[in-house]
Length: 132
Image 1 (cartoon, rainbow, N blue to C red):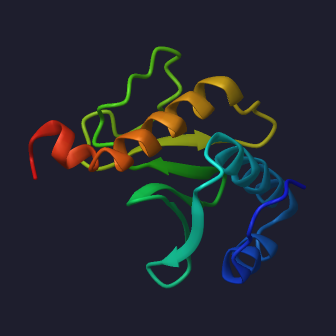
Image 2: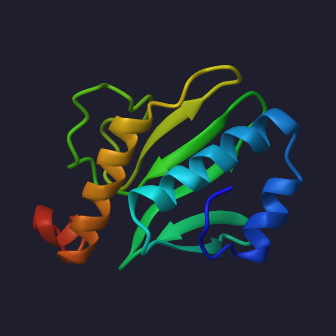
């Protein structure tokens, strides 16, 4: 378990998940904080774990047979390793779906999270794309 400030409601969300989803979500949570230690956990949309730094970076959502990681990047962060599984044309967020027993693409995901955080520090993807 990595050392960072944990949000009690994010803990509660993860604790309520089946073991295999909790394992994936905890690995993602640790990786998110490893990628950018300044990221802060919060809850939005009543129960959803979000990770923010000068704006949304990403969010977790457990579904019936997978865990979603939404990346709030306005589809501008490169994906040379093709880890994005859905939302390629989405104007706000793209998604990576994680199924049971699938490895997490650590290095490419860390790279993407760091770029999203850097873009947020530079004013956010809307400003960078000129849609603000």
